[in-house]
Image (tube, rainbow, N blue to C red; front, top):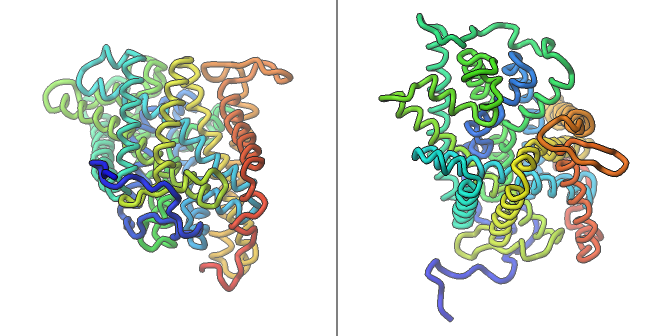
Length: 523
């Protein structure tokens, strides 16, 4: 039998020797703390997230955008600690899937895993779109950047390339992330510092608004609805740090390093977002004309217009503007790659535990990466992206907004799982009470509130977003709610199908429902 040029063919049977953490055949010890933090930060795609979301936040809450951005950090940090504590007891790459199963049972765990999968597949569509548009803009091909067909083709190519990199190996993925992240952070800091220097210089731009204490007063937001919508949008820009935990079985010191990386990532994101949001608002203001952050024409990409205004379009400034475009391109590309990583490992873990078909538990014999799970994530993302693009750009836009519901669902579930799993040890010490109980509980409650209020009030309004659907019984409902809730309900249906076809996981789960024993729980 001949050997393909790329090396041995992927195994035809699952390589796993067991379904527990570290027993699934992945390459252990491949990542250190720095690589894990880089993956966590890159997965959030700070530049892309700010470009696509800052205008939306400003449109909802006005000058209070900086404080809303900062407050969205609070539930993220609390949930990051839930991840840290749960990972210390069970460093399984299935993360929420495994931990929710331990706390609440196999069906809840399955839905937690589905929450990760559906959120990642939906966001891949927008990441691919941004990568396609910025790729053409980088080379001055504006006519192609405005073409739906060509940006779709470019987006599909981006997904395919990043899927291949994830397939080849986790170390290559981590090395690429470190370089891309360095470019991204340096450019964001340079943009913010340059903007503030110009605002407080002798010749500030006409749009400049000096930083005010009122920007950091959440009570000045016009309404609770606006505040909630702003928080949900801001939560999206922090999402992704959990990728550092999803690669735990490939990380040195799997019980400690991934959790530390998750917490460090969220703190670094706070610093980056606070600096850039304040600087951008001070330079551009919130006006609805020109570079104003309230200009709807720039809402889906505020950094391009800001780059031209802050750096200029000629000489060295023009070079920096091009570099800024390149940075957003690499940011979306990096996030595309790091979005594939957690989804592939979630489905890989679910298959190893017999919660979905065993084919998804296959591991490449040389690269030691999930094969079917990685390739399947790429194919599903491409199919979803092409389908939504073919239907309507408006549907694609609303699908991205619906990601916030998926994020709130599985992050919040993780917080509650942490509290319930550690319930027997919460009185052991003040640290256990705060970091295993109170913090994760508050994070879970906050996200549950934002999920319910967003899904059934803000997003359900038929005037919210770009589409609305006339549902039986409920009448006209906002497309964001329909897509977000519909995606979770689809998962429930698929769970029932899996239960009927292959019910091993649901009848005899190899992750027993239990609470941490005080003698075994990590301190």
